[in-house]
Image (spheres, one colour):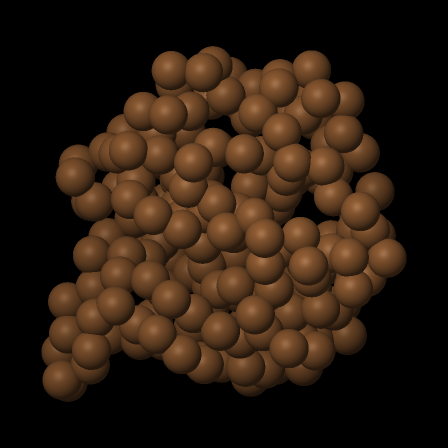
Length: 192
């Protein structure tokens, strides 16, 4: 797991331990690039997180990763092209842009709570039924685009998950999404 001052490493670590995996948490480029899998969890603000990544050269490390890579919440957003949160240029792995929620029917922002995911594509969702519930906490979202592999709806439809090459991202928190999230993490661990 990449340590970058914006991750909820502890809860993701506990979820992996429940699956029999002892995670290594590091910001050392050599350790990260030699890992079998990389998880990029995130909670926080986009521009501060991107500054931290750039100052330590972790942006280049992420872009150079060739093993299965999973961004969670802010981690996924930082993998997009640009975030409206403080007008932040992100990593550009995914071409989708990150927008701020604008309530249109009295929705509360940030979105906090359970929501369904649908239009599931990719091995990341093996054995996950359409309309499964996952746990979300966020005020920004990635738009629908060519890399969208799951959708959800809150103030409009957006990408619940993205995929390109070895890179996967989920807007929800699998580590807090009960048995559905556990299966998604298990699926990620089994991607070759």
